[in-house]
Length: 319
Image (cartoon, rainbow, N blue to C red; front, side, top):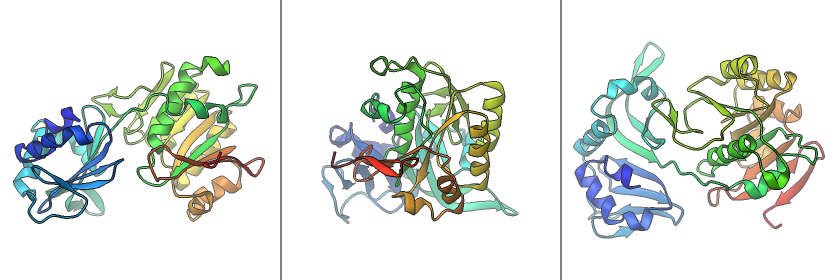
C-alpha cells in the first residue's frame, strides 16, 4: 500500500497516508475521480476519505480531486513517459510496479473503428494486487484425483470475487507440488492475456506462480494455446476470462492435445454463464470436469464446487 501511495499526487497522498493503517491489509481498489473525494473499496466496506476522517456516505466537505491531481498522478505512475505504456493504454489500463493495475477513463480516441487511447483522463481505478499464498491449499484435493489426474476446472465468480488470485495460487501448487497429496508437481503454462495473473511488470512476474511455470504475458489466448502446446509442453494451461469463439476453439484444441485446463469466467452460477453462447457450448460439451463458484460476498469465498461429470455438488458453503 505504501508503495502505491508514494506514487500519488501530494493532495491524494496526504489523504491516503492519514488512513493507511486502516486500509493497509484489506484495500481492494482506490478510486480517484475528478470532482469527487478519494474512494476506497475494501474487505471492510466502501469508504469516502476526507483528510482526517472517513465515511460510507458521500461528504461534500471532503477534498474533491482536481484534474491536476489526476494528471500529476498519471505522470508519476508512468514515470513521465506515458507513451511507453501506449499498448497497455489501448486495453484501458496501465500496470505499475508490484503488479497493480490502474484502470483509466476519460475521452476516448479512435482511429477509424480502432480504439487508440485517452485524452482528458478524468478518473483512475487502482486495483491493488495482493498475494494470498496458500489460499487454495485446502481445496487442492478437488483439482486432482487419487491417481493424480488433474481435473479440467472452471472458476466462476463476479468481479472482485478473487478468481485471478485463486488460479494464481493453484498454479503455484500444481507447479511446485503438494507433499501431503503426494503430488510432485508438473509443468504449467499461464496464458496471461492482460498480465494480470502473474502481475507482469517490465517482463517480470510480480506474483509467485510456481517454479515449473512458464508465462506468456500479453498473449492472446488462441495464439497462446497453440504456442504453449507446440513449444512448452505443459501438462496444464491456466488462463483468465473465457467467453469468446476463439476461447471455445482454443479449449477444444488443448483438450484434444491431452492438456488439462484451468480457467475463469465472469458470472454468478453455471446457469448465469450459459447466457454466453460459447460458454454454454463449453459447459454442455463437458469440456470441464469441475466448476468452482465463488460467492463474491468476500474475496476467495467458495459458494460451491460442482462435478459436471457426476452432475452433483461435491462441496457447498454449508459444509
